[in-house]
Length: 442
Image (cartoon, rainbow, N blue to C red; front, side, top):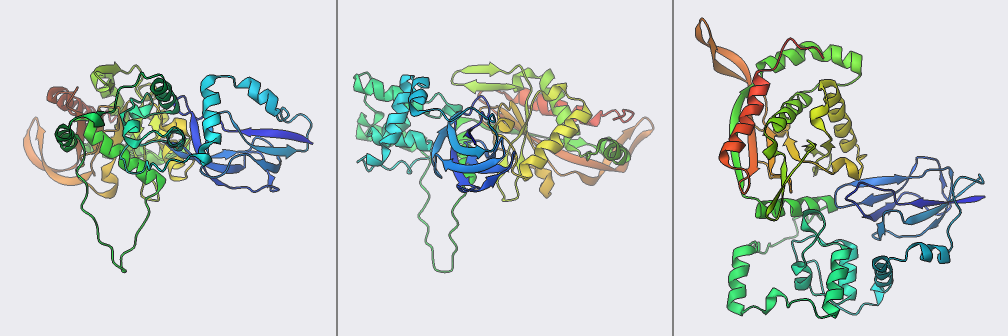
């Protein structure tokens, strides 16, 4: 018998840890290769961890709600072969392989969490802190106000374990300034009034009301949306676009395309192609904001907002979208949309977006004012395509005709994108769609 170590797999360059949400297998269960063993959750996406071998689950090393680092062994699977994997490392070997001070500190703090005597609550905040960060803060008696005052180096400015451990070290050496709470009471009230969101009025619940707990993803989405509105100065530009030529072209080619490629040809890849082209022409829309700095992105990675069956929203990313032809774009759109609906996205599928497109027309909305997906600076909403009477200009004169039209709604960050750039960008997208080459083949 050989013992195989099931490790938490790498889940994208920006994901270092995950929370175990459920075990799909119990000790003693038989497991086949590629069969899901457990479910995990990161701050970006929920996913499953499959087994790499056939065998029997003999040991579970972490429980539900435990935070696991990428590369850590989470379970032991006993196989029939003799070379399926390296044997389980001894405790002594494992200790020698992780000598880093930070890793040792985290291990020590995590092991002592249950003995912490502090009663500080970290739930009364709009900021997101991972379970590991909360555990370290609790062990070190870090108040919520101190935790919120730490400048984070993680995604969207989040405080990660290294930030907190550095803060703890500085605090013990006396190099940490007093929290802003030390300001005069009157000054503090003014600051809170100017920066803190107003507290919602208390709700009364009677016996006929149903109280529904928000899902983990729902809580994350709510946090991201509020944080985005508080971060960016949202401005919108709207433009109406005639897509009659695209409507007729797709109707003509969609059956042949599906027969040849085995893929549906929707409007989305056509719109994505136009957005990618417009971003190449307006590179200052393909940027991110980092404090007082602007990061000009080299790659054009289009986020594609997708609604999930449970009502939540996720944004998988089409990497290097400007390098795809229409066939490649259609395959990428269908693949990501299908895996999003089936809960099969990997964390890396949602990472690295530089601009986002959302199709509010899917549910019949004519217009939308979408919230920017931080740290991006723009998001385009595609309205429903409608059959409307319109003035048609021809060399022989103007006449009233039936046309297929839609609205494009562009939300952008007015801190770094002025009205001219925001308006010109969405205008160019409309021009590319209206000038669609109906003679092209696919």
